[in-house]
Length: 77
Image 1 (cartoon, one colour):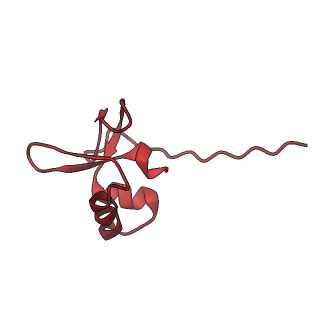
Image 2 (cartoon, one colour):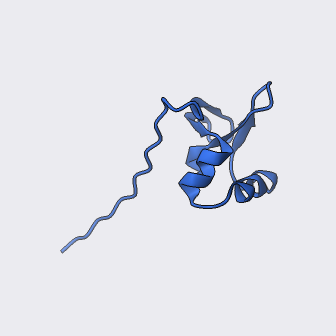
């Protein structure tokens, strides 16, 4: 008997807090989310997300306008 489980994270790119962008660390085009959305996906506080950014625990980009976006793929790790 074989039991197989999977975890699926659904990110709706139609939401204004999500976008697709090149993640330099992943080397691929990935879904980038706001710190608030990242916190919801990771089930942690927004402050924890900012700590992870400061500790380079997650991949991120900052837009020229200063908007922080977190690589959704790096949240899985």
